[in-house]
Image (cartoon, rainbow, N blue to C red):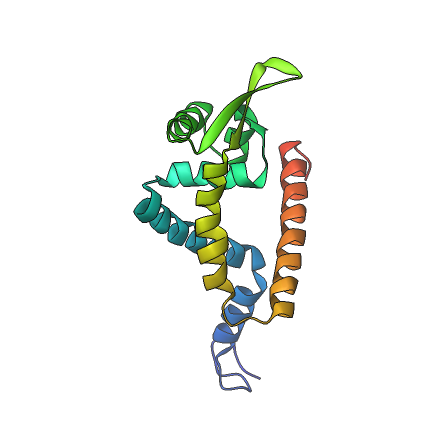
Amino acid sequence: MASDFGPSDDGQSAGQASDYHSDQSLLAAQVIRLSTLVRRAASQRFRRMFDLSMLEWLIVVHLAAEPPISLTKLAHNASLDFQRASLAVTRLVKRQLAARLKNPRNARETRVELTPRGHAVFNAIIENWLNKELMAGFSDSEQAAAGDMMQRLIVRAERVLDRDDKGYL
């Protein structure tokens, strides 16, 4: 019988096999790593092509995902303090990439959404460049399966976050 540090039947040490299994089973860690890499790649491209900061890029992504959205909810969803989110939105509005709108149901609340120009910038990076780069070499069925799995993971993560926000274990 192999010890914890000795060779296993497949020629790997037990520690190596355990590490490999742990790395493969920690899907959350892989998703975080993928998210970080995608964010960095897109951020570099946004800076070069459109002179957008990482913060502005983050706001654009959140606005594309859930328009129109209150500034408070946008800051919360992007894990930013309200003031930083507001300043970034102001810069995007000045560049005509985002628009502030009054909420028809609450006159005190401002909602934010991407303008057509903002959507064009988002699409130029995400759909026309990054998505093609990431999905190159995957079949249509693999791409569809990856998209379905990511959507399910997003819904699941939202439930976990909501439960944790409410203090449930």
